[in-house]
Image 1 (tube, one colour):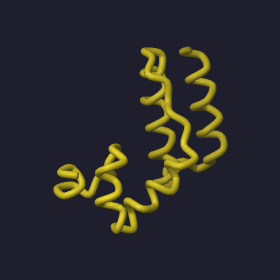
Image 2 (cartoon, one colour; image 1 turned 135 degrees about the vertical axis):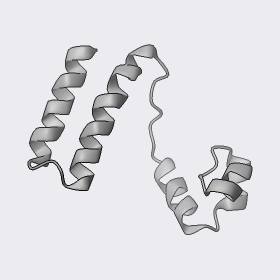
Image 3 (tube, one colour; image 1 turned 45 degrees about the vertical axis):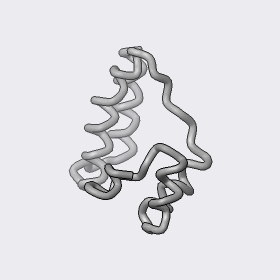
Amino acid sequence: TELFKVGHRPPASKQAFEKAKTDKDVAAFGAVGQKAVPMPNIPAMGSVWADWGVAQAEIISGKASNPKATWDAMVKAIDDKI
């Protein structure tokens, strides 16, 4: 609950979430989390995050002139690494 209080970060603990879910953003994260699939905690996932983050940032910021091509290039780069 303390991370929520100081940074409005959605709590991972179900007990803490119950205390913070009155916040609309936290409630939205909770709703999405109901259908979420955990990411594997394996070293190979480290190969994913850099390419994924760059592609997402370019698409969201509008820097990617062709979002589909940017996403496809990201997928290929990740596939090549793992």
